[in-house]
Length: 159
Image 1 (spheres, rainbow, N blue to C red):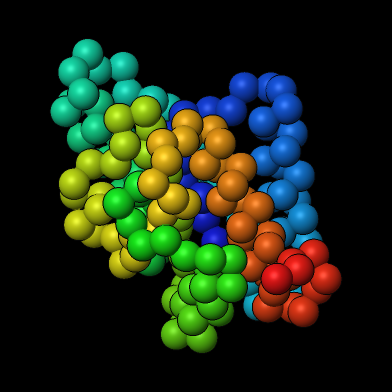
Image 2: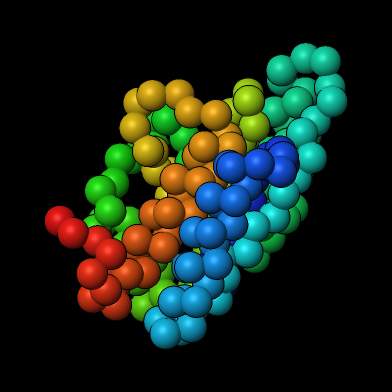
């Protein structure tokens, strides 16, 4: 199963980019041990439209296009909150179900379009607080790495 992270916006060079890349690389080293590939990050430019509805729609269309053929997992503050073991189980469950690709979708500053949420196989949340999409990307990549370590019995995760 291929793991994708489709995100609106780019990370500028700096500590956030380094941290995201560190977790992506770590996860990428463990993924093959579980029959997985990735995570691959797909950056989508932010819409330049003036009004929020148009920006959301354009960004939503781009997220849907880039995640075509994958089971979509939308990250939204209204989604289901998971602990790290539940997140690891989500990865394992989708792999066991024969899912070819699992795409985590992170919206831009305006959030995700209704169409994206409606088309998602799962909607999850990292809590009720509002986080910038750059930070959500880092937390997601860390949770993917942590989820893989949980499945492998690696000591990184200490309950």
